[in-house]
Image (cartoon, rainbow, N blue to C red):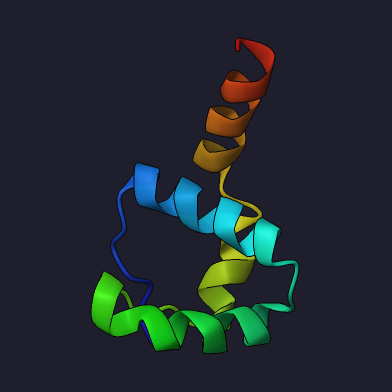
Length: 68
């Protein structure tokens, strides 16, 4: 499955949601699949794993918490 094209704002929100759920990536994938009709996003667990290493997300979160 190819990586979905999601803009930076939605990726940051998704990352925060994943962290708030405090579930495994596979469990989070199952939860998000229930929300797919509302969000229009089909996310797999590998994509969720890649969010943790996304340098743009790290930069945004750093700026939010350091410069706020």
